[in-house]
Amino acid sequence: MPSSVRIVHTYNVSEDTFWDKLFFDEGYNRRLYLEALKFHDWKVEKHEDHGTEVQRAINVAPRLGDLPGPMKKLLGDNIRYTEAGVYDKARRRYKITIIPSALAGKLLVSGELYTEPEAENRCRRVFEATVEVKVFGLGGMMEKRFVSDLEKSYAVGAKFTNQYAEEKGL
Image (cartoon, rainbow, N blue to C red; front, side, top):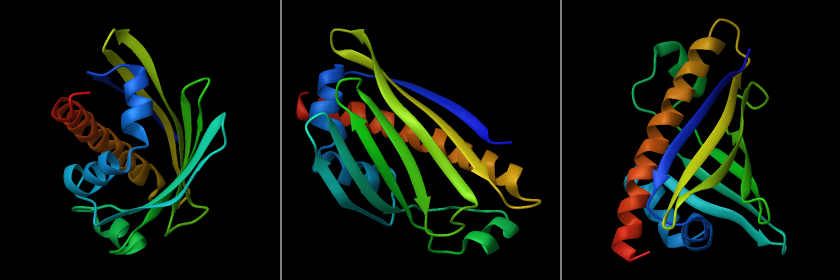
């Protein structure tokens, strides 16, 4: 059975600022992934604005940290994934599918990211995700680890985003 998670953080920017000046900004993303999250690599594979929606794909290589032996054996040392997303401009919702370099068809991560206004220059960023690992004997443990990693990385990202927005005067 898949694991679900709902991650909520408050950002000290308006929804417009979040979507228009941060979320798709290359400088912000480069620093978020490479400096704040300390990923090995980050690159935009696709960014297409079709008027009502934006399609984006980024390819990243996260740091995995200490993994239990069976997970490390299964995933290897050089995991990468592509985050393929579609942003609906009218609804301000970004649907995400994660496409891993390892365990294709066995590791399924999808979700939706959206904002809710909180005050004039504050919004909540909400990410609702589902993680499913179809590996006999390891699925549940791996799902818990991936959910925990999502929660940690989104917390780091929220802290970084607020610092970046303040630094840039947004």
